[in-house]
Structure formats: C-alpha cells, structure tokens
Image (cartoon, rainbow, N blue to C red; front, top):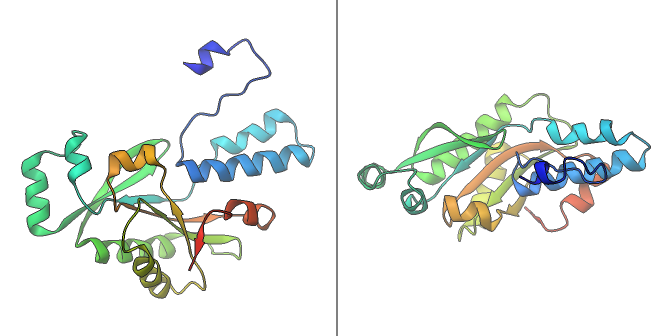
Length: 194
C-alpha cells in the first residue's frame, strides 16, 4: 500500500518487511554505513534484499497458535500431551513449517547445535542470537545454549510485540548472523550478552 502511495516520490524508499525487526535494524545500520562510505543509494538499498541466515522460531506454548487459527484445539491437545514442539522457519517474510521437536528445551538446544553445524565458516563477526518472547527462563536457556554450542558469548534480544502476539509468550527464535564490527556496538545496544 505504501509503495503505491509513494510510487512517484523519489525521496521516499519503502523497505519491504521480510525480516524480524531486530535483523531489519542490522540492515538499516549497514545501509547507513554504505551511504556514509559513498555508495550510491540504489546500490546501498540492495542490502535490504539480502537473505539472512537460517532463523528458527520455537513456541513454548501453543495457545497463541490456536487463537490465531494456525493450530486446531485437538492438535494442540495432542502436542501438549506428547510434548511435541513445532519448529517454524522465518524465511523471506513468511513463517514456514520447518519440523517438529520433542520437549521445548531439548528442541531449542538441538536446533542451536544444528544451526551452528550447518552455518558456513564461522568468523569473528558471526554471533549466535536468541530472540526472546519474554521467556521466564531465558537466562538458563541462554547459558545452556552457550555451553552446548561452545561459543564464548551469545546475545539475547527481545522479540517485538507484533510477532510475540502470534507466537505467544515464551517463544524463542534462534539464528547465527554476521554482525560486522563496524555496527556491532550500535546493533547490540539493547541486547543482553551471556
């Protein structure tokens, strides 16, 4: 809608929301850096179209999925009974069924290990991020993941409310993402390091 409204205005550029809010901030910081380094506006805007690394969303409870119509009540009851956890991938602005896990904490740790194993060569600018929907056990979870993946530090960021409303309180997102040193301090300003 905004693209249509401002189609003739060359001073306004609309960013398509294809990423979680915090990773979009990373792109904005990289965009700003590119402009400051003298890149053309058109070249700098290509940053917003780059695909992020794998990002997985794992809800702790299924209540929000049921309320949102993404899961039926009988399926939620079965999942709760057998402790089945849905694993959802956030890709190109869409939530895609990725798989199923068994027991929330075990699933999170296993998926964190898989993300690290499947990642391209890890450099000093690559950071493991946990994006958290107000999980009451986040400190324990962060330390458990940190020890399992053997990283010297990981960062926890709050999940935005517009996504938490769909995933439910307690949901966890996991990703391993490149954060260049030039934007690291600004990017992690509101993150908690473990």
